[in-house]
Image 1 (cartoon, rainbow, N blue to C red):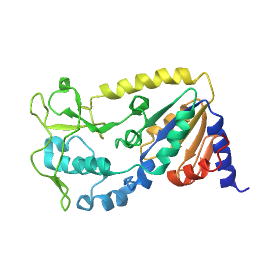
Image 2 (image 1 turned 120 degrees about the vertical axis):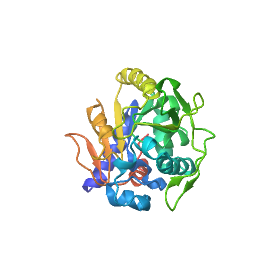
Image 3 (image 1 turned 30 degrees about the vertical axis):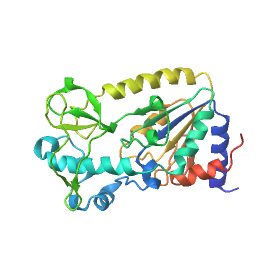
Image 4 (image 1 turned 60 degrees about the vertical axis):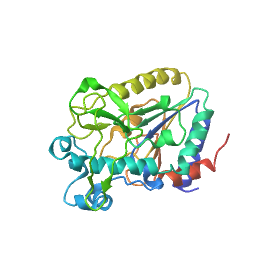
Length: 273
């Protein structure tokens, strides 16, 4: 049995034998659904050609809501439509099957703002979106105006320029510009109340999950924004890292150098339930 086959078999055993499951997901999790992961400037420019010469970190920045709000909503409005119209790949269904069998349950820790786990049928109360969600909005002007769902909000975007057409999303309380409830780069105005509530539920689940064997399955979490990767490494559990590029793991952990869907499908075929 070669190294990859051995790693896949070990992963199947770890997941099958666990009493609880933590799923850690970065941008690479959505690639098999057709979503861009913005890895490197070339990846970002392929997704958004009019922004050639700029970096993702420059455009995912709250300064645009002050400097050029139509440009800001062109970028985020396009992403909102893309995420709404994307069907989660079959790997999500495999994870859900594993998760729902665990006697001590599961939780998802993700830096993704796309809402794909909710779209795949996971319990929203078992998801921690550490960078927020594009499916919720907040007011640019008034922090005390809270967070509200983006349901019913439609942003028309010129895809040749990635500029949004008026009317743009507004705060229902004061009619100021609205923005996504996403933690952007250099962001001091993000309202973390919604994510803080998710974090409290996660802490409570973690305490209960500590009574049994925990499997940590990390998918597509790279080193560029390593929030998920570092969290999974620090968690007390058996780590299975699925990543085709950033494959290094701590001692004792399992590294599977494949994309998310390929790896999950191969592990699932080796189940020992």
